[in-house]
Amino acid sequence: MAVGLAVGAKMRQKPKEKPEPDAGISVQVGFARTGDMASTIDVSGSIEALKAVQISAKTTGRVVSVPFREGDIVGAGQVVVQQDTSDLRAQMQQAEAYLQSAKARLSQATTSEGVSDTQTEAQIASAQAALDGAKARLQIVKSGARTQEKAEAESAVASAKAGFENAKSNRDRMRSLFLEGALSPQQMDQAQTQYEVASAQYESAKQRLSLVQEGARPEEIQAAENQVQQAEEALRIAKTGKINKALREEDIKAAKAGVAQAKAALAYARLQVANASIKTPIAGTVSKRMTEPGQMANSGNTLMELVALNTLYFDATVSEMEMHKIQVGQPVKAQIDALPGKTFMGSVLKILPTADQGSRQFHVWVAVPNQGGVLKPGMFAQGSVRIDEHKNTVIVPKDALITDGRTYSLYTVLESKAKLRRVTIGFETREEAEVLSGVSAGDELVILGQDRLSDGVKVNVAN
Image (cartoon, rainbow, N blue to C red; front, top):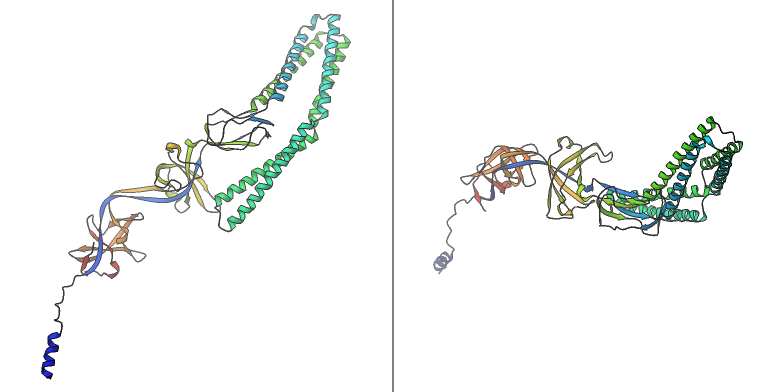
């Protein structure tokens, strides 16, 4: 019975399997290839405009027309803001009348040699009229600014103060967000700039109000008083009736000076009228419109901003350690975060000579084409500057490389065995590296599974 059990157990035993031959360590491979390898420096920055202007008022006046809005294209020399010219044109007409009067006095002075008693009386009357006019002018100068001008100046101060306080509040809020890390340095700089502009406008408005309240300047009053004195002296001379050659020569000189002064006054009045038609010095696109019809535009106030989109460039920052590698003309490949999938090819246009004191970063201007006008000032950009290139060199996948921090090596596969080779590395990209020595184009390289290999071990290529 025991023998039968033993035999049955033996028959139920599973037969032993024959051992399989050694298949080797499973690895994945790639290949060394021949190609061109460039050495690049990564940069980042923003798109800026080479031509951008802030258009300001040159004279104080009420805005009557603003024909362009944000996004509108404007040609160079076009009027973008029109101020009221009614008062200015009246002053220009008055200056024209003064010029005609001065020319008449000059003509009178040059023909006074044969003056008669009757003509002398006419001269006295003319001198009296001139004196009356000078006194009237002096009275106008001493009376100071009109009530409406004072009210407008006070309104401008109130408006500028409100803008200043709003900009200050915004800056303080932005500073808190910046300190918490919720705001970029560019946004913080913009808030600070808006605060400084609002502060300057507020101070300008206060100074304007102070000038209006103070009335005419002492030198203006003094000039008007001098004109009265001159008119009194002219009347005194006319009354003497002692007209001689020397006196006539002096009269002619004074008349010529009067003509010159009247011409200067007329030129200034015409300039003021022309300045009321505020024009853009460049062709571009309106980026900001900061005034509306009916508002007062004080001298120096920024009313509109324009940017020439065909002059955009990539303002890139480069570390001081790599700055020596950058040269004008080097090609640059740029990508814009706001335009995914698009690549812009440009070149180094200018290298600024000084670094930012805080970051120690240098600024490099890169010329980039703006086909279709898709690029806008302020867009964040990243790019790579190609500083050198090797043609027809051996290139391997970076996954094949093994390093101890000082040297590089890799495994090649030859006749199903791993061969450890020490290599010298040249240029690199994120995915590949140039090999200057150690492998040849076409060599089969282990790119996955190196950590289980040793020189000469048998491998099984899984891919």
